Length: 193
Image (tube, rainbow, N blue to C red; front, top):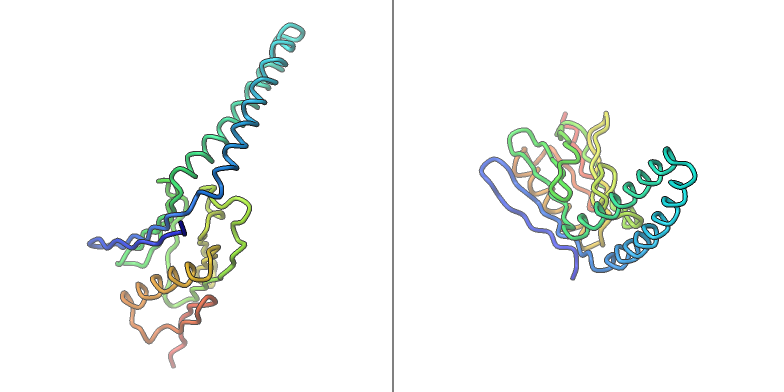
């Protein structure tokens, strides 16, 4: 299964859903689970030993370490099970909100008088493609003084599909002659004299 883009139109908003193919990463979660089980066994062994000898801060530190590992495992498992990035585009003021695993991770205002840069970078999220953070994910957005920027870590066809949908939405909400579109590279405001 490939990554899939789906667009839903609402009254004042448009939602673009990127349903991500999580199959290649399920082995990573399985490996994490095995490591977590091994850590649990080691944790119990050492926690008992530390408790007998030290009784206190070391046991507490081990508990915190194990809970942190468990939290990371659960977060990654949840993200892979709900491997979807959603982009809510408001028609009124061209605001894009990014949601990962149902959580709002960033909101970017698009100023149509400034540059909207779209960078096609297939290796952007090769390491942690599903972590629901502002900078990570298959598509990440950030605002700059010059405008806003999209980093797209998808295949060429998928990136093109996302960019075409985004471009058509911007053209629909704004006057078309304000923009020049360069596929996979830039979508920027045209200086009108």
